[in-house]
Image (cartoon, rainbow, N blue to C red; front, side, top):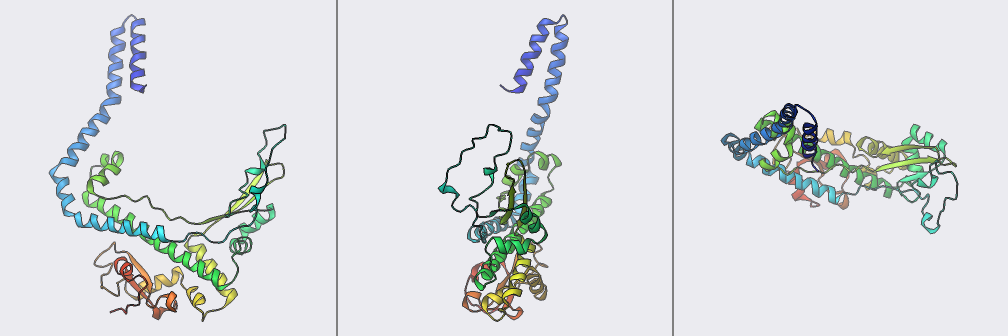
Length: 335
């Protein structure tokens, strides 16, 4: 039963029990009006705003901007669906499903130590000392306990993960900037943004994307024998962590003339250098962030790595998302 109905019923009962019932009833009606009227008035103002000539005019004026935003949202979803966001695994508890467990203790106040994620590939069950050491040296322990050995295959996998994470981070950030810009161009009343933001975007025609960057998270977990104590260290593979992992692997294998070794040079620092070198301008269509402030730019291998290309500055170029999407894995010389 709605709270307002309950409120009215309670007031009516009290009114019947009190001598000056009409005063109580009047106060109750005023109180109810104070609760219900503001939302009703806001709703009327909202409907008038969305039907206003000013709003519809703005909507028509920025239709092309909205359309491009939605295209970038589709592209972001494509990156998310095609990317690989998993790396390495822990072998602890790999066969835990082959055994059954029963807690025969008479004391249930203690935490069941089997709540530890024994079968989770991204959780390593270990001693308390390992948990603490992992906090101090996350890259070293990540490699050691999640089977990320210093080999060209693993190095290539880490680099692929870094590329997917960086592209998706860039695309998601670009979407947020575009949405903020669209909102600013309309300058809607404050109450619209406070109470009806999602509805506002739907009226504008913007498809708000719930896409987030699925950073792989790896954990070192300790659960005491009694089950009443536990500690955990987590390592999130964001761009900064991936770059550190790439550099550590490359230093260990030192195969800089190989394809995998050259890809190891592809870090956030190098991507920033290439975009700056190219004046934040697409090498194909020549569009730049000066002309389009919210332009989504990406760093591309001129000769793809899969065809023997290396991650050296002379083999890297800045492309806008449209040109990079169209190029795919083809070898097309920049103009």
